[in-house]
Length: 95
Image (cartoon, rainbow, N blue to C red; front, side, top):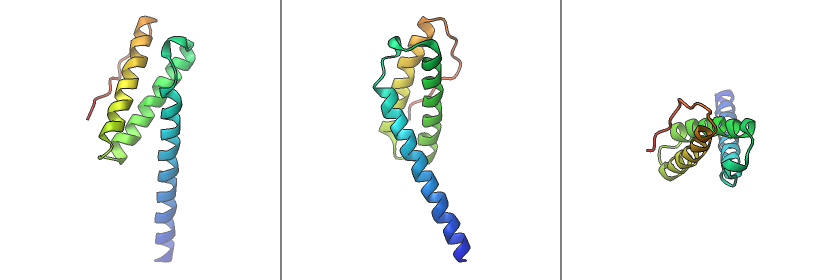
């Protein structure tokens, strides 16, 4: 039984570290103006927003404001991608 408890604690610690990492990445991206980024960075940040969205929407059902903020930021990045002629086929939904 002690083994299972250690595994659960380790899994919980990994999950918490991942959530903190995603929140840090979100804050970094939030401070960026998409119009000032080159295409590669713009697309990379866009992909990161999808990863953060998937983690936030799935892991924290009470994080409605965070998920909606991610969607708003995603929309801002998508609008810039479309201005540059970069295709986008993966919309995100607000909660």
